[in-house]
Length: 291
Length: 291
Image (cartoon, rainbow over all chains, first blue to last red; front, side):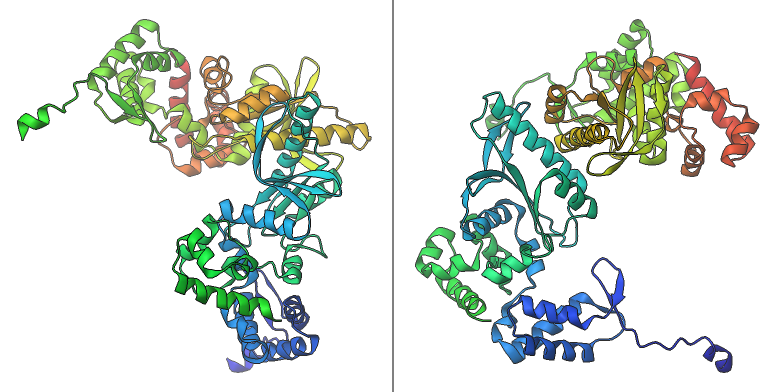
């Protein structure tokens, strides 16, 4: 038996990684280097960590487990704050769609220096629409549409983008008819996950501006968050759901907001305990400090 | 105790019915009359049945149970074929979205005398779209979009209608650019359930033609089906799922199709047993015969 079977053994050095959606792809050390660089880790350290992760990986390892090893190594060898961190992708999907993620996106644009008006109802030709916000960039007005998926691997598809385009048209017809005073120059669609291929192709053609987890290739949501340290409150690990929700209810969704406000003020607006908030603030500060 | 409590007893004759979505509404005998009339029952019989149903109803009865009583009384007093019938609403949602319901809708329009082209891919300006069909009415071409919900109480909402409008625009831009040869005069959206208020309001304004369970008020899907006896195969009760699926796979989705084809032919295209098909056909014939 053994003699026969040995004819069928395939010798291979390939090690496969199982992704969250179940697909398998070959282990790629450079992806780990890029993940580390995105988190502000110097290249030297990133290369070193990627090599260590490769040593500890095995065929069939999940991307989630790999990320856990990366975080563990980063907290041990690079910076202790990594102990307190959720993965950014999971942190974004842990925000509630409303009011947290909408508020998060509005602050995200405000932090880039743009004027952002809050959510409001605007009349179109056929209907009134509740917009998630209006963003002004270089004197131009954009309708903001925010899509949040609790599952960080759900994609935003074509149908959503088609609907937003039709909404934009109807709003501008409303302006032409004089039922509204706002003329929009375009629409910005922000999503915590990826867009489908067709959603991207249509939007590029129709002139919708998309911002998602990994789109556009440069300056996408994840790279901008890392670059400007616009981490959501859910990025801090280890507190009860209630803590994040009470902060969110008070309009506090960025770690920057937590760090910049006095504990007494945070306690007043959120109704949370000062001691607990001090701990939260300490962890937030550690994360924002370095790298 | 009893003395005190008696002060709070509210005397009322109102009997409430619990709808499928959990809402309660007052028992309304005229609704039962209308249901019966829609099924081709003469008014006299309809009134008689409604009165009997009211006698047997109680506060908190479900609409489903009411419908069961109606069918039971109809089969006993009016026509035996009601024994074999599923409710039409449930029958439509029991069809598979593809290929059954799409095929059903195309045949539905063909039976009204319109020219219907099958599903196909048409190029727009930004993308290619797979259309569920193209319908010609008085020399005008309409893109057909079919929506099917397995839950017969799920509504089709605004987002769907906005997306269809944007798709129609993109297809016509494709025609203007010369990448397609079809100019559409509009879009027809057919759904086995109801539309939301906003979906209807938008579509009426934007010029989309909707056809749903109870829209438009006259000549909606349910009244047209009853009037023309365009019952789906799932209207016949009591066969295995496999039977309906094999018929559907063969493009047979109407009871009319079953009745008009020889059993040997049905057996050949579907691969089903002739004896079983004879029984199916017998029940179908009984339903189509009267009322």
